[in-house]
Length: 278
Ligand code: SAM
Image 1 (cartoon, rainbow, N blue to C red):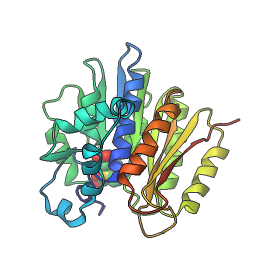
Image 2 (cartoon, rainbow, N blue to C red):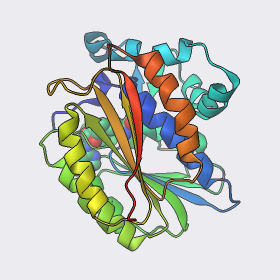
Image 3 (tube, rainbow, N blue to C red):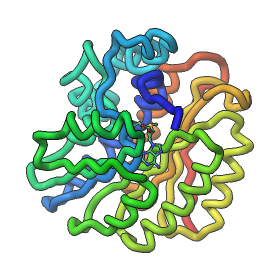
Image 4 (cartoon, helix red, strand yellow):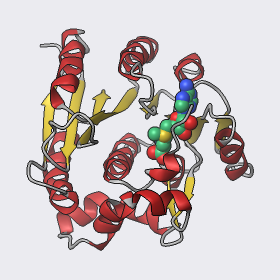
């Protein structure tokens, strides 16, 4: 387990993922019923901006810093407001990871369950949420432990799946996770984050997903440059099972704006696809 999120916290992919996380949680909260949020690969929750890791990559300068400083309009502002509020609770000293973004979304009746397997990171995450009665932290394998807790007693909820893609097997693991979790929890939302380097590879994976006959599956992608250089993170995407019906409209406003603000070269853009069974 060599992946360290401290190098990448606040990059364009984090911004995309965390804004989508807030939109999904907000939709689930339209009904006055408790929700459960799962974060299967949680990281440590909070990342100092003055760390060596952040200085080494400078990725946050091209992601979160650009978005926080960008000119918005009322429609964009409304869509990013929950994310901005969650970030501003820690900015400018630190960058919140998905656990603290999710935490910021909770109402009193909602619960958050976090999984982190790394032996150095899991204790830090546990410590960060030590006094939090709404959040449980498990120092466990998120692939297995999360499925074993699905379905939660709250019938509404979301599992965010954000693995490190270190060993080439996470694309397959995501398919298994999606199958297992939606079988156990047909109404649950599942959001799978993935990197886009060369789009041919991810398109093959997406066509496998499309062929699997999920009743409600949406894919959203954001590119900061043309997705054709195999050794660079050119974009990222999120496949969402049981995505809110309002999401495509929200993405049509949000994604072109995010691509414009965080673009690094020609070919920046976005794509939204329905991968549902027809
Ligand atoms: N979701 C976090 C965020 O947005 O702030 C970032 C997560 S980072 C991309 C992936 C994390 O998964 C790393 O902290 C890594 O240690 C952890 N990890 C790797 N394999 C895991 C596993 N099998 N179960 C749980 N966590 C794992």
